[in-house]
Image 1 (cartoon, helix red, strand yellow):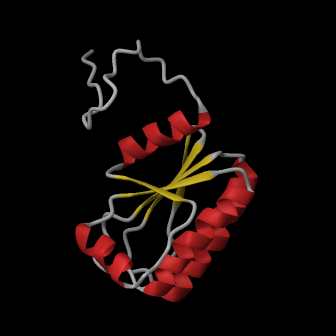
Image 2: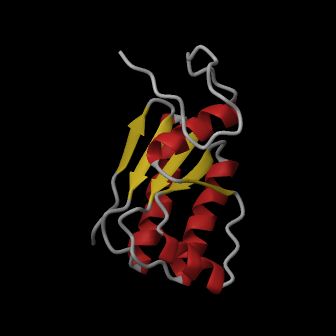
Length: 139
């Protein structure tokens, strides 16, 4: 059985799903992720689903369960890279995804988690509120 790797980046666990999410893989991911949250003490989880073309109701519910388990273990979950077809499917299936925040990509997901935790990202505060484009700094 394939397993989805869980990578630690600072205080965040990054899950990049690059394989078909069969039911058994989704259940194994749920268990592996809970174990890694406890082992690392991380407070954020980013699940990158940009490689998924299709999400069925079981996988959608599993994502919601992962978010709920993560929250109980003191970690917030952000799903990133959702394709429009996947979003439409989730809505058409009537799936509620409580506890899951979304962002367009991993970078924006990391920013979202940092803001939710009240972390200072070290920038000089020049970000403009209300814009959709993150500030870009040059070396």
